[in-house]
Length: 177
Length: 197
Image 1 (cartoon, each protein chain N blue to C red):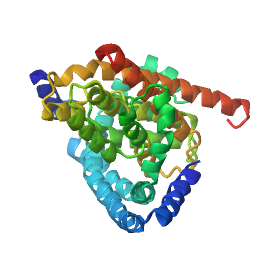
Image 2: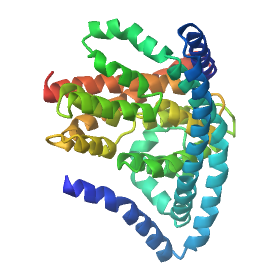
Image 3: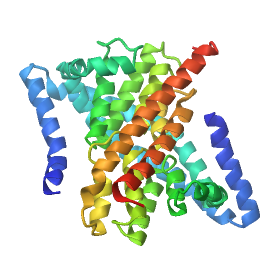
C-alpha cells in the first residue's frame, strides 16, 4: 500500500518535470507555450457551463422529486430475479448519471455493510471500473460545441451495463458470494 | 436522443413531484444544482488552464507526437479515420494514459483537446463523428490501473486489505472497455447499413 501512495504522489510532479525538462532540451520557449495553451482553458470552461447546468438541473430534479427512487424500486424485482443484490441497484443506476452521488452511495454501502463484505467490495469495484457517462459526454461534447451526440449515449450506457455486469461476475469469482 | 432524455428526466421529475408532495425539494434542487454546475465549471477552469498549458509545452516540443508514435499500432486500429500523424492521435493516447494512471484532472483537458481535433477532422460539424463516439466509449469505461479514490474510502473504513479490489477492478474495467468498443463497432456498422455514414 505504501508504495502505491508514493507512486500516485510522485506521478504528477514527475510528469510535469519531465515535460518541462524535455521542452528545455528541445529549446522550446516553455513558459510562452504554457501561457498560450493555458489561455484556451478559459474559453473552454465557460463554454461548458450551459451544457453542465442543463444536465445537472435535469438530473437533480429527477432525483429530488423521488422519481429516481421510485424507478429503482420499480425495476428491483427484475434484478432480484437474476440474482443481483438489490442493495447495489441504486448505485448501478446512479453510477453513469452522477459521479458525486455515486461516490456518496459507495461510501455509504461500504460503511453500512463493511469494506470486506460482498456488497462493500462490489460497490468499490463498480465505482472504480466505470465512469460517469453523462458527465463525460456533457463536458467533452459541450466543450467543443457538439450538439448532436449520435449513438454516443447509447454506446456509453450499454458499456456501463457491461461494466457493471462484469464487476458483479468478477467479484463473485474472486471473493465468493 | 439526448433531447428526449433531458426533457424526460425533467418532466418526469416535475410530474412525480406534483403527486408526491416533493415540490419543495424540486424547487431547491433547481437552483442548487444550477449553482453547483457553474461552481464545477469554475473549478474545472483552473485544471483546464494548467493542464492545457503543460500539454501545449509537450506539443510544441514534439513530445506528444513521440508518445503517439509508440502506441500507434494499437490506437490506429481503434481510430481508422484519424491519420496517424494527426495531433488528435497524440491527445487521444495521452488522455487514455492519463486515465489509466488515475490522473483524472489531467485526463479531462486532454480529452477535450482530442475532441477539438476530431471535430476539425470532421469538417467542424456540430454532430458527433465516428471517431468521437469510439473515443467516448473508451473514455466512459475508464480504464484505471489504480482506483485511488476507492482505495482511500476502503482505507477509511478499515478494510483488511484496502487494495484487494484492484485486480478485480482492473478486469472489470477491461471487460467494460472491450464491451464498449464492440458495442461502438456494432452501432457503426448499423449506421453504415442504414446508409447514415
